[in-house]
Length: 459
Image 1 (cartoon, rainbow, N blue to C red):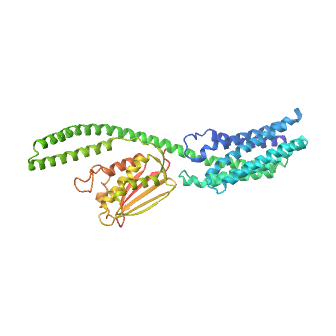
Image 2: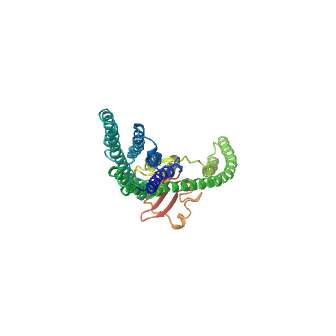
Image 3: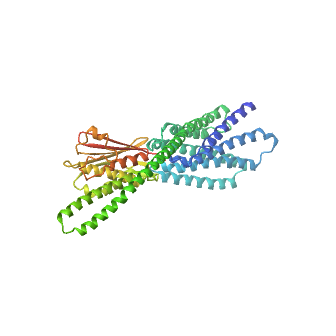
């Protein structure tokens, strides 16, 4: 066989696996929330070991005339190829956690049983066969059991996991499906095509290897997109924090200056009431003064709450549990209501559970206040690739369009004078914006609909 052609074949073949290793190695997967990210280093190590196996085999073939074939060299060849496929088996073992297969435990027990039987058979054949025959049988078994078996299993787990990429809101599944198919094809090529066959047949393995590389290259773009979004989100949050901090300092200073004389005036009311306790007319006037001062104090406190920028603890949050907790907080007010709740159990975002609970509790409380006659409340939650959405609607008749446009402005309220400060929806909108989400208000045929949309993977 033409040595130049053989050199090109082994060079290109090995490059495919080294490229797989470096494609993963040079990506920062540390902060990724995509579940497969934690196991991709195993796949990278498989690529490194396979690339080393291919090039070292060519080295031994190229310089075979300069040394005598020994047991140590044959043993080295068997160990390096076995080690590479054991790494791929470990990758498949870990990825099974994300497949939702019904017989994962059975498959894992089967893998352990096969490994045990192979090891026992290895020790037995070593004592019964001549070493050249023993090593050839061992290499064939490694090729069939571990080469084909681990590749097909790893490919099946990646293909099955691909649909979770879309469900988790990270992007499209096809690149991961292609990677799974390429792994399966590579496994069959390893099992049915041996090194002793024609180089043209072995080229099928080369095609499968580059199929894996190309599919992996497109699949890894998901992590690039995720990282870009993380950087954009951090910049937006930093800019928003700076604006809110500046506004908060100014507003807090004003609110504090207002609360101090208000507290002094309330104390004076208490002292004056004690001195004029026998005069009903004076007591009535003092109560009016106290009520006005208390309202002004409450409004000042709401201003402080609005101006005070609470830092968001961005952790995985189950919106299903958050909404249920908000319902529980308002349970005593919802006793007379007919609740229609339909929430996706897998509804999850990244954010602050406590702040989001305050948002939904406030919205539910407003819906209760608006429902004077038909006491019905609908709460629906669903998700798509990128967003989680919760809709809360009542049967309170809704709001005019002119009112809807102002509903989330600070101090705007449709409640009776003295019943609300008009800061509730403003605080809700502020919290949702901090989560890079969107708060929408619109009417349906029965009443008002409040729609909360949150990005599912803000980090």
